[in-house]
Amino acid sequence: MSQKILVVEDDYEILNLLKDVLEREGYEVTALNYTESIIKSVTQHNPDLVMLDFLLAGINGGELCHEIKANPGTALLQVIMLSAFPRVLDSLGNYGSDAFIAKPFDIAVVLKKVKECLEDRMAHA
Image (cartoon, rainbow, N blue to C red; front, side):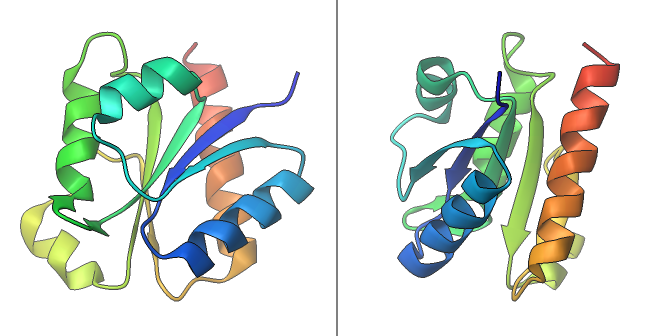
């Protein structure tokens, strides 16, 4: 059974690129450019990993990460934050994310981080 990844990214080019690359690697990907409720989206799609853009339209992706980590039903879910502004994360904290990828990113780095996070989840399951 393939592992599921939920990607929330408001830049359609990046969203589609991540979806294509991850699907080619055999992952089942749900790509959203917006979510009204991250907990509802996670419950609906039941991913093994969530990738969140830090700056989403109208909301801070870090806050979504915090919601995931603060909810007892989703707290163990692996979360990767994506941002073109790594210094913002340095000053505000990582919101409990398990990994960070700076934009622009190298596809090899993305695949490595995804694999590491999914392996870590399996080790703690």
